[in-house]
Amino acid sequence: MDSSVFKDLAQRYKQIPSVRTISSDHLTPVIAFERLRSLSPVRFLFESVEGIGGMARYSFIGCSPSEIITAKGNTITVEKNGSSTTFSMSIYNYLSQRVDEFAGYTSPHYSGFSGGLVGYLGYETIGAIEDVITFKQKTGIETPDAFFGVFLNLVVFDHHKHCIHIIANADIESSEELEESHNAVEKMLALFEAKLNTVEQAQTQPFHLLEQHYSDLEESDFLNLVERCKQNIFEGDVFQIVLSKRFGAKYQGDLFNVYRALRSINPSPYMYFYEV
Image 1 (cartoon, one colour):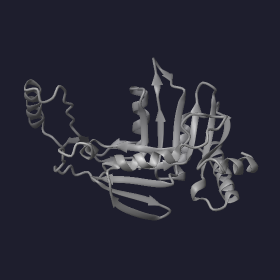
Image 2 (spheres, rainbow, N blue to C red):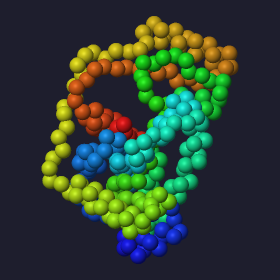
Image 3 (cartoon, one colour):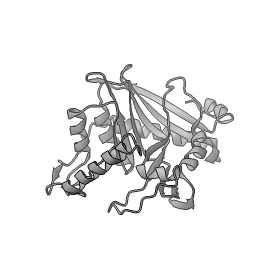
Image 4 (cartoon, one colour):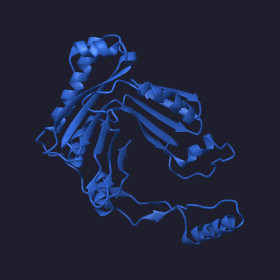
């Protein structure tokens, strides 16, 4: 994007995506993701299959989030620029406040998702909506109830037009110098393009289990839960219950190879790999 155009848009928008489009005939989303992984420990790949074996129009890759947002109960932590802030608020209320920040300029070269909040809301966050639901049982897993990154840099595969859109956003509200902000965006676009065009093959470690998988629930306990659920349904408390049983095992290697195997065995409309 030309510097003068950028400065003109900065007078009207808080967030401006710059888009650089290249051919995708030498890349796949999996290969591109492997080449970009070294840029950040937090990254994601979103893919979708429609019909029988047909890729949906877009695949998304994101890395290098400018902020990390986590929630445990009503405690929210925001990490940005090497420092963190913790406060008490419902994660739903907080996200509602933040989401309008990303309604920025729409590039004429690409009008789809061009950056913003990407993450997950765990089942435990229902307690922020229905306060009668509480979770007291210890699971042994210290993952946040919710995790979001603010991703201002994306790589978007357009499978219909056989091209890749490299997107870097300038956050105008936090930029004192427009010229500096514009230069930073151009450098980020160049960095992503160089990574995508590298001839060096990304190295991944083969994945294998080091032990038999284990479950947090014995089969007899699980069957007892099934009977309790049937009784709840019969009594009219609920009309549907989805039980889950967690499995785990120690492993060695790259978990991305598990994702690659799953996308081959069971392609679906909602495929994602999110490393945090």
